[in-house]
Amino acid sequence: MLSRPPLVAARFSAGRPLAAILGGLLLGLSPLAAQAAPPEPVADAGADCGPYRVGLREYPQLYQRQGDGRHEGLDREFFEQLAARSGCRFSFQLESQPRIWQHLRSGSLDLASWVVPSAERQVLVHMIPLLTARPMAVTWRERGPMSQADFLADTQLKAVAIRQALYGPGYDALLQRLREQGRLSEVADFETALRAFAAHRGDLLIAFPWSLAGQPWAWLEQLRFSDWHAGAGSLYSTLALSRSTVRPADLRRIERALRAMQQDGSLAQLVARYLPPEGVQVLPAGTPLPPLPVAAPASR
Figure (cartoon, helix red, strand yellow):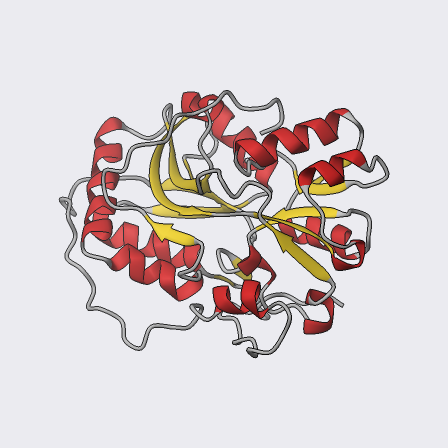
């Protein structure tokens, strides 16, 4: 049975077959020994900013439901620090991936975190690069080593993915081909995708390896993690702010606060508490967006 990953994953033992993939990644998922003193705000606390509505989705380590019903994770701490730095107020709305974009289009949400950039999305939101990460192709070990070409050639194989998610040009093109062939099952969130994959209703899941932390070893050892686009750059992840509802003055205020978090290392420290150092890189302040290809019809 699948379990909810803990917010801080246990270390994997070195002798396990998956240690090279998951174990190495997850050794970094440990709390910092000490927290820095609260930073000084970078904006005029007397000026009104917000409240702005932030669309959050449940995802391991980012925004995760606890036993008492509260949500904890990187997202909550990130926006708490951003609020303290900027003097802006934020309120959270738990939504599925598709509904976040519906609300951003309609003006009923103002911000979203960890957004993969595309030309289509850039029309709707201003995106500030935060970090890069690498998704991987997760398949069943029993099928043996498999390339993307092997997967496409076997028309009996199917994939499961989060609706309107982006994974980088290579994986997005693959999922679009599978969609056109009727070989893609699309669901609202990661937990549903993981359940469908675990029930063998899919033969491929595109995921960040750390998102499977905390699952039983007996199940993890049935999986194979492959980088089918090793030559491609890592995936950019950004903070997205609505072009229609976030005031320009507040956008600049939030940008200044975020730049301060990047420059003094507090963003890197925060990310390190929840995500592994391997495969995740916090970007320096002022990093530009990469060239943006036109998004596929169903885009994250």
